[in-house]
Image (cartoon, rainbow, N blue to C red; front, side, top):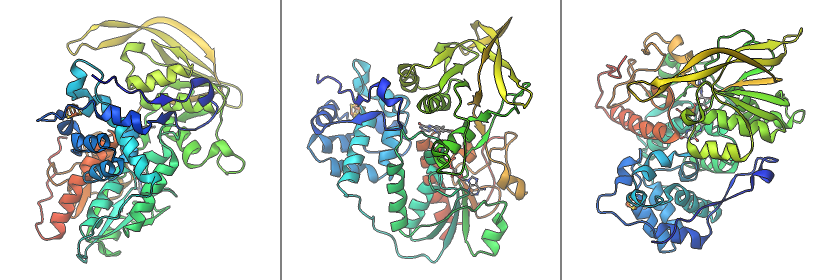
Amino acid sequence: MIPHQEMELRAAHTRIHNFEEVPIGYSDEQARLEALRCLHCSKPHCIEACPVGIDIPGFLRLIEQGNPGGAAKKIRETNFLPAVCGRVCPQDKQCQAVCVVGRSNTPVGIGNLERYAADFERIHALIEIPAIQEPTGKRVAIIGSGPAGLSAAYALTIQGHEVVVFEASHRAGGVLVYGIPRFRLPIKVIDEDIRFLTKLGIRFVYNMVIGKILTLEDLLHKEGFNAVLIGTGAGLPRMLDVSGSNANGVYSANEYLTRIYLMEANRFPNYSTPVSAGKKVAVIGAGNTAMDVLRTAKRLGAEPTCYYRRSHQEAPARSEELKHAEQEEMNWRWLSNPVEFMTDEDNFVKQIKCERMTLSEPDETGRQKPIPTGEFFVEDCDTVVMALGCSVNPIIPSTDAEIRTNKWGVILVDNNTCETSKKGVFAAGDAITGGSTVIQAMGQAKKAAAGVHEYLIGKVNSPVPSTSD
Ligand SMILES: Cc1cc2nc3c(=O)[nH]c(=O)nc-3n(C[C@H](O)[C@H](O)[C@H](O)COP(=O)(O)OP(=O)(O)OC[C@H]3O[C@@H](n4cnc5c(N)ncnc54)[C@H](O)[C@@H]3O)c2cc1C
Ligand code: SF4
């Protein structure tokens, strides 16, 4: 068997001084060798495990044959963001998790090969504008330009509808731009995808918060849209409710990353938004977002420490994210539950107080609960970033009583069409899951776009939400 081809990474001691992408990429020969490892299974489980059903063995065959441009074209049949997905998809939990080669060896590096094909296509300017159906005369408003909004915009434009994307911020991309760090997803990749969508005729309206400036009713009854699709994500951060949570220097991960990546606070005062870069940054949580914050803080020159109430083994971050953060030498405080942030007389955070935890016996699901020990410790910090997850943004449901949500604020939709409880209004992405992945958001957006298309061409569905409350 041909050995698995590891993608080379920039060395940890150099990469922590800049925001350059960490993986360097495959050479043509490495890519060909890695693609050759595919067994071309008669029943490819990898395709079933991909939320958008990419013909994985099909594109691997083209790489094998020395045709990466053709491979990218093949991926684009079902996924128009291959360069993004090759970089950020959790392949270890999806296609690669079920790859037959993985039963006895390292699975085929599907994500790395997707990235390789997409980069080849971009660098050689091979991206083709797809055929667009005759204009239908129907207009669709899409709210939010994250992976869900962009995917729906793409699918509906191809079907001949006129699409306008309304975005609250000044840039398109959603979390791809304001959350995922540049050293994992370079901005040039996203900018190229947005340029491509603009070339298709999609119009982007920036700095437009729907629910505040225009309402759903305005879009449907004053602005002349025949349908609306909500793709506003889950950007409402969860914070710890402990003393000092409101102190100066305490951020949510969303705010911290948005300041740096969307508002370019690391270039203050050349850009107008500042951020407390800090020397001792306390990051609360150990999921993927926490890893992004730790690694970002390190690149801003801080000494970051991760505080997590469970142990290393239970850290929810993907193993690769955790490994990369460990290579970059963070401080780790496992089994440590923050109970207070102490401040100075001007209410700036100065110290973090944690209770040491221990783990219970495993419960019926096998998970061990953190149990307080009654022992505490205090450490210095000048910045705190809480990476504890997010909830759905409430602006749209709170400004339109017809939009039903469950008790967590997640927008309820029909499982088949993604139509909400308001006629002609559909939703997709994190807004209907409460938080998921880029590719899941894209998969749902495809389904929602099909629902909108059916609605627009006459087969009106009954707007009864069937997502469980
Ligand atoms: C830090 C971080 C790292 C992540 N890393 C990964 C990863 O590596 N891999 C992965 O698969 N997933 C990752 N995720 C999750 C993934 O990014 C999301 O699941 C995905 O972006 C959801 O897409 P979306 O389009 O539903 O929402 P979003 O990407 O959140 O986009 C929503 C957009 O709607 C806009 N908006 C919100 N409200 C309004 C309004 N009222 N009017 C107009 N516009 C509005 C927002 O400004 C935003 O641009 C990460 C998430 C975070 C926070
Ligand atoms: S499961 Fe693995 S070996 Fe089989 S077709 Fe997919 S990538 Fe190839």
